[in-house]
Image (cartoon, rainbow, N blue to C red; front, side, top):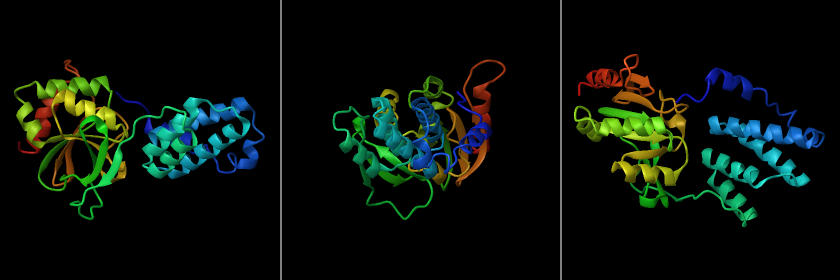
Length: 259
């Protein structure tokens, strides 16, 4: 499921200027314009969660909404989700305290693994049963052969792909031994459900997408075949039709890893 054209997204994001969205200028815009800007910028932060500039601008727009009293509950919740996407957990917590009456998405307790080395790559959150705890750790992707599937929790195409891979005698054992799933979406409950549903523990949330060089987290599912941390084969999507033979693509990836 491809969700956007990256080039078009970058072009749209570039339209949000600091001066245009200054506090002084925001006061001059109509309520309708503020609402439109907020929705547009929220989409940008959803797809570009690591770019703090857009988080700052979104927060500025929410402040203008609040000044006017035009915000909706969804506006506040979307700011909260943007903070989670940017891994700005303290800001998310402050917003939750500011609006104690709102039902925000469930968030886990965040802890760092005491055994985690000073890693600069492959950092991810391991989610506990039920999604109540997220432990930051470093995944062992720098050595050996690994199959990494990028997915979105709730993506029906990714769910079908994993169901078919784990249900296929040709691929199941090798995937269980060498495969893992990662998502950029900070959805601890969704990840916990996937782990339980598939009886497959190797499902993680990235610390930051940039910790995973060579991997694109903007569509789901994507299959990456890594040898000592380097991508040697990749394909995107899932289908069983003649025009897109995923079994053949899996075989190519496994062959590239000599599995």
